[in-house]
Image (tube, rainbow, N blue to C red; front, side):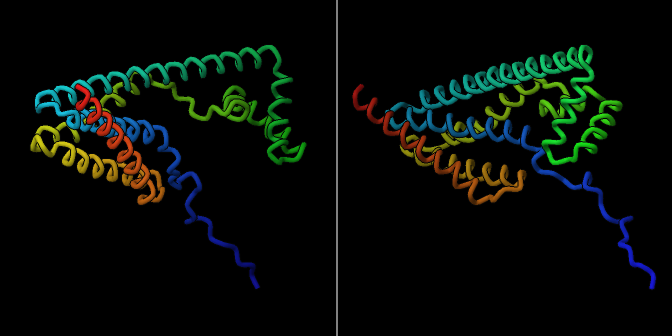
Length: 241
């Protein structure tokens, strides 16, 4: 009887499978920017409203908080990504020098890494030689340093995205503060903020393949704490004034 062999022609390649962890970089930046915009602006508006400020002061405070927060996010992200780019460039130059000055030692180092990962000594040596012949620098950056994404970081782009997502998130409590009755600003802004935070947390979890309920509850919980704290401070300062 003929041996049955599985048909592998229609089996999808492992490289065709979507890996949600590849989204972690942009997802983290976008969610963090929008979340900060919503929560910090809402907390500021709630605190100012709790202190007894008029509608104009509340609106001015919200706008100032949105602009300052967006610029702060842009500057922070720009500095962070620039520092990352500097470190990565230094690592690349260091590996280039080491490969030029001591190629045999670098080959042995690469083989040692593969042996530590479970390959036999012979196979580790063969893999190290093959990868060195194909792309020695890429192999060392990937397997020795862990630098898998060789595309250069973009500080300006990261800063612009962070500022835009912060401002977009800040618009939710800001607009609600404008349309809400003056004596109900805290309630309207608080409700809109919790709804926005919960939605953002669920969408971020869905994009990353994580449980949506847990993520939504997490951001809403911290949102409640932040707004309660600023409301209490606002009331205390308002009474003192």
